Amino acid sequence: MSKLETLRGMTQVVADTGDIDAIATHRPVDATTNPSLLLKAAQMEGYRRLVDDALDYNSSAAALGKNIGDDLAEGKPTLPLIHAMRESAPEQREVLREAVRNGGLADIDAVVSAIESTGSIAYTAHAARTEADKAIAALADIPDSSYKDALVSLAEFAVERDY
Image 1: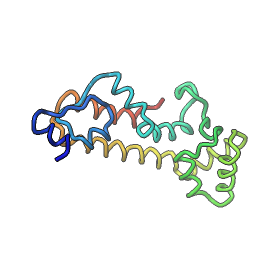
Image 2: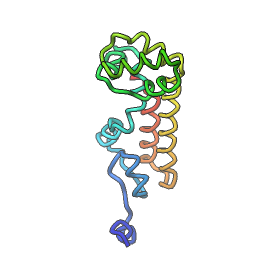
Image 3: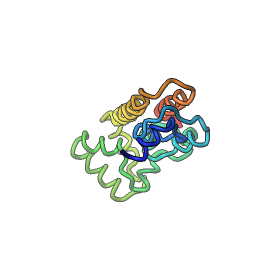
Image 4: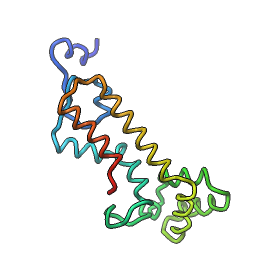
């Protein structure tokens, strides 16, 4: 018997975290609404990356807080870019590869055009929605409470935000 199973026999396990994966793993009877922990979870790479990837090519610099294409300028192959590379015509694919290889924004118009023409923003938004739905489903066995509601809201916020 694991330590967690032993503890469950003696007391109720609660989670003082906003990490939905940890909650799914340990299956507590309740979870936190501590705003600082929820904010920390919302900033976790795994939760914010997909939405950030979509917003990097589909938002304004003022709303996003960074310039469009910043990830590309740093040579980061984000999901919209990867999807566009997979779905684009060979000549577009080569432009995308070179843009990632070289970094910078010299070909940003061609990159954005490829991302838009291949439906890569919608693809990434769908991937983010799928991950949020999985996170929410992982909470299904936790009894209804304000804590659970906060975690569901966090998952929804992570997908629906536009900044």
